[in-house]
Every structure is written in structure tokens, then in C-alpha cells.
Image 1 (cartoon, rainbow, N blue to C red):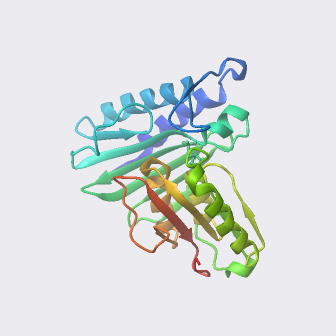
Image 2: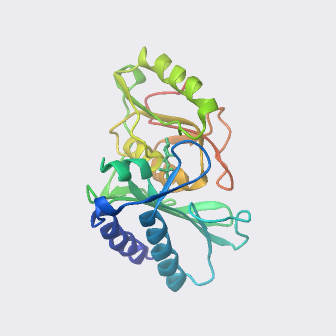
Amino acid sequence: MSWSKVEDLARACGEIMTGADRSGIHTDAKAGHANFVTQYDVLVQERIREGLGRLFPEAGFFGEEGAHDGFPRQDRVFIVDPIDGTTNFLKGLNMSAIAISCVEKGERVYGLVYNPFTKEMFTAQKGQGAYLNGTPIRVSPLPLREGVVLFGTAPYYPELTKSAFETAYRYMDHCIDVRRFGSAELDLCYVACGRAELYFEPLIQPWDFAAGSLIVEEAGGTVSQMDGSPLDITQPCSCVAYGSGCRPF
Ligand code: LIP
């Protein structure tokens, strides 16, 4: 399978993000505090859905924006976050990415995470390794005490905020430093390429981890739910990802 046409689609949609008229970005509020969707999230998702529909007319589509009536039943499903890190996009923080995952009979077989602001394209195909702009990447072998810990907790899950920051506080005593970048898919890719040693988040959607989790695994890392159980790509769950030199609490 050649995924290059999917990568070309992501790059083309990335130009929509980098070309956005920042003075004209408007948001619609979704459920919960600071849960934003812009006209660019919707436009990018529409373009990706159209492009994937031309390339894979038989596949199902499971995107962040719009209504869902359960996980699609097709054998092949694309899980898409058109702009992961929407608040970062709104604020011009340039830590946002297009995330596309292909799942076949429940197995993640391909993942793409593209940050158009840095032109960094992270990709992985099951059993074929992980890459950054075509160069192989591997997770860090360093122990936690020499590592950076990334974490996330969405403001629209306020009931989880305190415990997430308490967990980050605990890690702070055992690592170099912690960071909260605001894009789960990019956090996972930074673990995959060794820029960080561990990432955790108490609750994220399938489109926030389906692509990046395969990229971590293909880069030699480990990804699971925070209780150690396997990720469930059909529904929201917790996530922890780490390199070969450390273990989560
Ligand atoms: C984001 C996640 C991130 C989380 C943010 C936000 P979105 O997804 O990728 O990990 O901490 O609060 O939920 O909503 O920008 O697509």
C-alpha cells in the first residue's frame, strides 16, 4: 500500500492552516469549557474526508468534528483529527497537527501526524517502522530521571484537572522537567522521536491518539491506557506512552 497520496493530502490541508487569516478565525463552542472548533477545523476535515473518499471509497470515516452514531462498521476506517491542538491554532502557538489513522478490522495499520507550521510529517505503517520526514525515528533509551515528561488534560474535563496536575507534580520529582503542549498527537510523536521520554493524559478521544500511538510503537516505544490496559480506538480512554528506558508510575 502506498500512503504517499495520503501524505500529499495532509500537506495540501496543512496549507489551509498556515494560510489562515488569523483576524478572521471564528469559533463555535462545543460541550464544556474551552472546547473550540473553528471554520478551519471543519474545512480541513471536509477536504480530508473528500480526499480519502476518492482514494478509499469503501472505507469508513470517524472524524472529530460533526455528529457520530458510533464507530463505523466498515473493515477499513479512517480516524481523523483535522486540527489537533485547536486552542494552539487559535492562539497562533503553531503546535497543531493534522492526524490521520487507518484502522483495518480494529488494528491500527497506518498513522500520520503532520505539523504544517514546522513541516514535520511523522508517519508509521504497522511493522514498517516510524519516520519523521522520511528519516527513521526511535524512542529515547534514557531513564525517567534524565527525561522530560509531557502531559495533557483537556479544560473541558474539569473533574480531571486536579489529579492530572498532581500526577505531573509527582513526575516532577523524578524527571528533568514536565511540559503541557496541548496536542496529544504531537506529544506522542515527540516521545516517538526521543524529544521526550514519557507522555500521559487521563482522557482523550480516539482521534487524539490513534495515529501517534502507532508511531510510538513502531519507534520502539510502549503505549497503553494509564492502568496498563490496551488502548481502545473506538472510544475515549486514558493514554500513557514511554520510551525503552523508563516506566510510568
Ligand atoms: C487536544 C488534545 C490535547 C488536550 C487538549 C485538546 P483538540 O485536542 O490533543 O491532548 O490536552 O486539551 O483536547 O481538542 O485540540 O483536538
